Length: 162
Image (tube, rainbow, N blue to C red; front, top):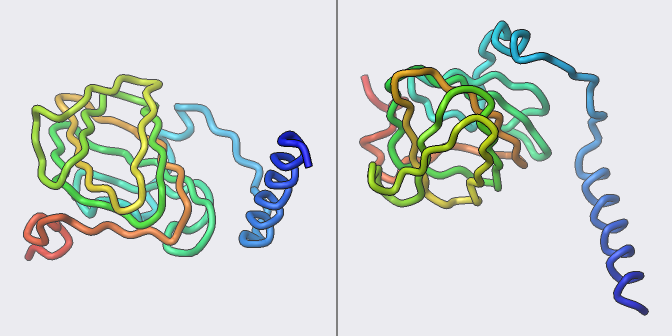
């Protein structure tokens, strides 16, 4: 078998597996940035629990197996401590300037400034952290569920604070 045929066979097998693992049909979904701004938060798995972060689910259910897409609408002056998620995720900055870093604790020196159009990854179970400055930020997250949010330091988890 040639390399080309092997790769084609693997691609067919992977796409068939992915299709059967996710029985849902992709919905028709087309929104402009202005329309996305008007969409109300839905909540859901995969958000940080930070009160300045609103989750808007676009596709799927992040708490269940399968592909999902979410908008994270993050208010100005937000700081999100180090945490990780189950399942690989990809982020795309669609509004504002996002400051994002990898590591087990928040460290401003490790933040990378990501303007609109930037793309970054959140590998499964890899700790990361983020912040905004004086403007709100909107990030499109796509991933494979189920996902969750686990803080590296449980004391940083805003959902466990009174």
